[in-house]
Length: 176
Image (cartoon, rainbow, N blue to C red; front, side):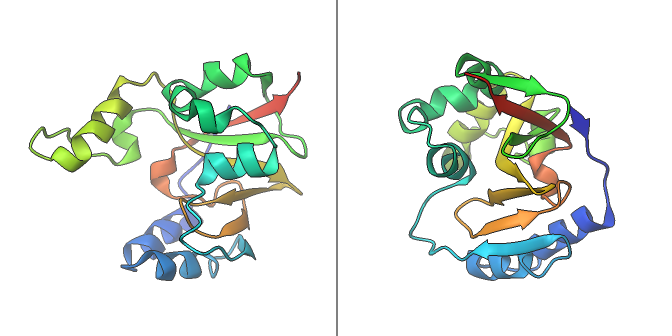
């Protein structure tokens, strides 16, 4: 596991997200950040998020669509059960997983049972086991190929992610 430091690039990433109000503007602005390269523009009707992009589209795994909830409950255990080993150093094609140490680091805020829309999602996050995985990508040419939510596909520096995706980076390699 690698611990990311807070860098000016990560802070700029967070400022970029906060300074735009619609998703399309956010995803376009992300591609202008140093250390982030736009690889493919995606229409927002294409609802693929990071895990689906990595495991279904890129790695051709068949299990994710059927077992998405189980994967997010405990990704570390789930990936190891599906033939991925945890590695100290990444190699080309490895899975890069970003995680938070605590639920608070994800930016969920306090769980308020009066917030009916967000209550279930927040409660589900709190029921998960740490580390709290937030984002997945693929290690390519010393960078990470990934999607941020329903946005475009980017090739970005390992540290160029929003703060709420965490400060811990894990590397997984398909072994079986």
